[in-house]
Amino acid sequence: MSGVRLLVGTRKGAFVLTSDGKREKWEVNGPHFAGWEMYHIKGSPVDPNRLYASQCSGWFGQLIQRSNDGGKTWEPVGNKFVYDGVPGTHQWYDGTAHPWEFKRVWHLEPSLDDPDTVYAGVEDAALFRSSDGGQNWEELSGLRGHGSGPHWQPGAGGMCLHSIILDPKNRERMFIAISAAGAFRTDDAGKTWQPINRGLHSQYIPDPNAEVGHCVHHIAMHGIRPNVLFMQKHWDVMRTDDAGDSWKEISGNLPTDFGFVIDIHAHEPETIYVVPIKSDSEHFPLDGKLRVYRSKSGGDEWEELGKGLPERDCYVNVLRDAMSVDTLDPCGVYFGTTGGQVYASSNAGDSWTPIVRDLPAVLSVEVQTLP
Amino acid sequence: MIRVVLPAHLRTLARVGSEVQLNVEGPVTLLSVLGALEAQYPMLCGTIRDQVTQQRRPFVRFFACQEDFSHESPDALLPGDVAKGAEPLLIVGAIAGG
Image (cartoon, rainbow over all chains, first blue to last red; front, top):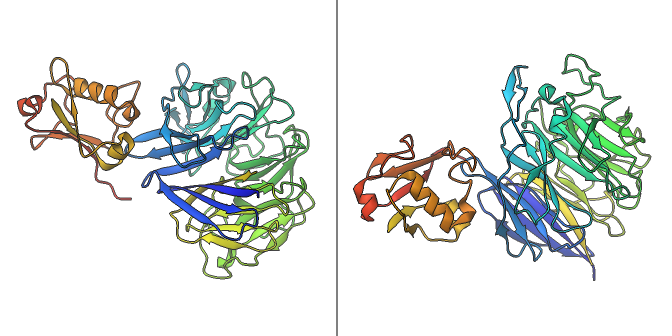
């Protein structure tokens, strides 16, 4: 019988939550790496038992862990992330020049073809690749060397490269997003990059329509239609139908279009999910009611999903990598909160149940659908 | 034998007890002790000092014989009692909540 495995990264360790295909009863395994910040854990689509995890600490720095048995056991692999050449400067919060400094790995994206190849999005923003299972890391420096780097600036969470999307139909194409620089695309497997931010409008930068400087929070793509991307920006939910050449706003009737997560139904590429957050200065749901919003029309028209979610006194956040979907039918949707809850819906969002309520603050949720 | 006491998180990472023992060739300095430690436990590379600059990580401190060696030159000799194995070098995570 098929099943699902959730890989949950938190401020104080990693947890592996498993269930069968019914998704009613869950086994909670963890904490792994107790006491460490686990920014992201993700499995290889080629070999689901090959997992990579980003483990870090303000005291002891960055580690990468690898598992070959679905998270039962782990081994530390390479953690030497060195920028290519002289890193130069980016903008600090006040607009002054600030040197590039490696801080942590926000996101790990295993290759679609090779379990030993994995990409890492790091802070200060850069993209690294390992081709030997995480032992050695090399920067794809064409991104940072694009020329706009001196104009990138950190968002509140730091200047992080947080989204990496590999095009399943074109192995030369990849999308990434940086807070706060914007989205970028390569069409030559990472050698050269172009910013893809036309149509984004951001009041917090001197030129609201600038080529770079936008605080993109997350981007998502459905594999069967890789030219269509959805974006949750600092404010505004956006969509492109031409691989990022142009974007249009699809916030429509959302009660607030600030938020962090965005994801897509596994079988319906026009069905998308966001969790509206009150504002950039109040990172919690409107009126203390936790709500997911779903659009079945690719944006603009949104419906409120609240069955099973807190109706009052809820002041958590849902961070950018903390939502994921499985590929079962009906599609399962999962998200984690800074209050330590992980919610699951086994009916595409119609109703929700907490799997766990009291984990440390959840940083990321990835789901694997197992045979 | 040089004795080194690691902080709890690094003990877990290196899968060792509270104290490890190292053979150190030549003068016993922070540089030589950390080199021997990382050679014996390569998973600790980067956790105590930067792998490129060799600078101590900001929230890591080095104590021995009731003295703070965090700001000493990496080439300075450690106390004779550390070199003889009578006292351990303490690698400590700075106190800072969380």
